[in-house]
Image (cartoon, rainbow, N blue to C red; front, top):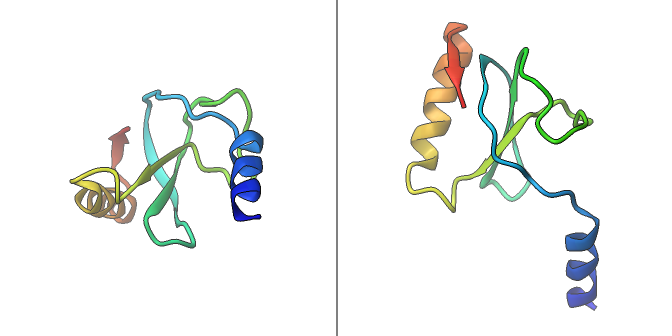
Length: 87
């Protein structure tokens, strides 16, 4: 049953496209599993042709990037200091 649910979720999810933009960090959301990081970049163009319901533009997995935690630290520092970042 779990395999069917996983297959259905893979079919229903949208594809992610790699883009880049510059702006201030709005919201940073940590996924429920603890390794997914969702980032809202203010004044960024739409990245997938539609706005996400929670307004995030970019995502990364701390498990898949060796420097994931360092990237998260930089994003939080930029958010607190109201600095521009390029993702």
